[in-house]
Length: 79
Image (cartoon, rainbow, N blue to C red; front, side, top):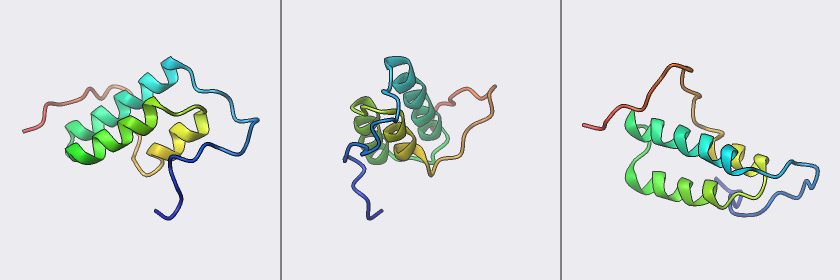
């Protein structure tokens, strides 16, 4: 990846992330874990980043490579 995902954003005009913002990204990660796109290690690594993200840009950078699921998609259990 080359870029340190843990580094805070340098753009102070980037809005602060709220708990609700972080929760939406947690749900996105859980969805992709449920579909098998993320394994246990990757899920936990990204959850740590999302839960500690100070700004919205940090949240988007953590999940930028994941497709956004359809609005009616619910997480499915892993097999």
